[in-house]
Amino acid sequence: MPELPEVETVRRTLRDRVVGRRIESVRVRERRLRVPVEADFDRRLTGATILDLRRVGKYLLFDLDDGAVWLVHLGMTGCLATTAAGLERHNHVAVDLSGGTTMVYNDPRRFGLMRVVRGPAPELAALGVDPLSPEFSPESLRGMARDRRRPIKNLLMDQRCIAGLGNIYASEILFRAGVRPGRRAGGLRRLELAAVHAATRVVLEEAIRLGGSSISDYRDGEGRSGHFQMHFNVYARDGEPCRRCDARIRARVLCGRSTFYCPTCQG
DNA sequence: ATCAGCACCTGTTGGC
DNA sequence: TGCCAACAGGTGCTGA
Image (cartoon, rainbow, N blue to C red; front, side, top):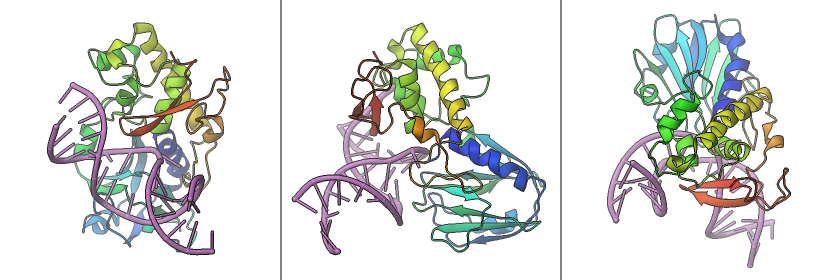
C-alpha cells in the first residue's frame, strides 16, 4: 500500500492532531506484526508527549519528549488514523491522546511494524537518500547507477539506495522519464538519468498533492482516500491505451514485481 | 552482485 | 452459488 506519497500524506494529516499531545494509554490487541510488537511497547509509550511527527523513507517517526522515537512502518495494508470508527476488524493498536483523540493502527495483512527506539535505529541506518531531500540529485543517482547491471526499476525500489519508492511510483516515474524499467542502470546515459531524477520529483510531488493513491484500502490520517490512482499512466493499465501515444500498455514481471510500461514512449 | 523463489498475512477477483 | 488459484502498495531471507 503505502509508498512515500501515502506515508507523507498520513504524516501531514496526522501531525497537527498529535503534536503536543500526551499519550494517556496504549492498547495493543495484536502483537503479531511482521516484527512482533515488543512486550514493553505500551509501557515505553505511555506518559510521553509527542514533540514532532517526521517521515524518513516509508517510516513514520514520532519524536517523544523523553528522547525516544516511536517508529511505524505501514507495510502493505497498514493505516494509522485518528478517526476512531469503533471496534473494527484488524484494529491492532489504539493510542489514546490527551484531549480525547485516539489514534488507531489498522493492518489486515500485518506486514507493518512499530517499536520504540532510543538512539540510532538499525532499520533507518540502512536507508538510502530520501528522494525529496537535496541529497537526491542527478549526481547522486548517477553514482548509484554506475557499473550496475541491475534494472533501473529495481534500483529505484531499493530502499538502501533511495528510500520511499515502491512498485507503483517506480513504474510511473519511469514512464514519465521515458525509460524502460528493464534497462540496466549502468547503461543509462547521463541525460536519461537526469530525466529519471526529474521525473521522480515531479511524480512524487503530484502524488502528494493528490493525497496519495488509494487502490483498495489506503486511507490518510483522517480516514480519507487519495486520488492519484486516477492519474496513473501505466500502473495496472496493461492492455489499455497509453494516454500519450495510444499504444497498448504492457505488463511484465521484473524482480518478482508486476511492472508496467508503454512500449513506444519508453525506449 | 544479482535475482528467483519463498516466507510472512488477509482480502479480493476472476475463471470454471 | 461455490471453490480455488492468482494476485495485491513491503521487506527479508535462502540458495543459485
